[in-house]
Length: 229
Image (cartoon, rainbow, N blue to C red; front, side, top):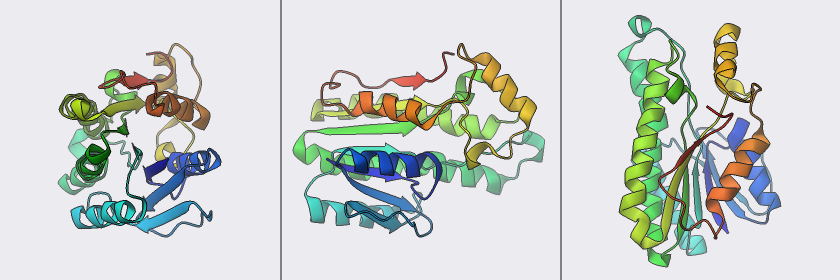
């Protein structure tokens, strides 16, 4: 299996890269900076996911070397916790460029390769912040709500080519993504869940395993929110 995971320098992306390497996948990762992950089957690109030229080069290089791309995991993302009236336009642009535009570009370019083989699994990242509507998360949640809609429509457009497109909405996980979120906000998030605990990396991997399984060819256009919302 040839699997692309975006945002692999740390956090969930780093875990997923190591996880699928252990499963025998060839893993292609990317981030804006170098990675210290070393493995014979891991190949790292320095790339900004919102840079169309860089993404095209990454996908073209991978296809030229391996002749296929089986899985795309659009993990790269940034969070922002801020009241609307204190939020700059540049901050909004930065969040949407990474969370939405980056996901869109990767879907577009990778699906062109997957169509050649009539097979592919694409997994996007949303968040439980979308259905919760927590104050201070208007921009972040909006960027991830756009991912949910993108997932549904991409699933319809790509379904006839043997490509499934699904999304995962993680509960809060102890990574750098939430380190600046106030404790009371995190508690409110957890209290919305049926299972009131932090998510773990294994919860993410378990859901993605379900989505990318070859037998999951009838599962598409779905978003699974973890924690039981």
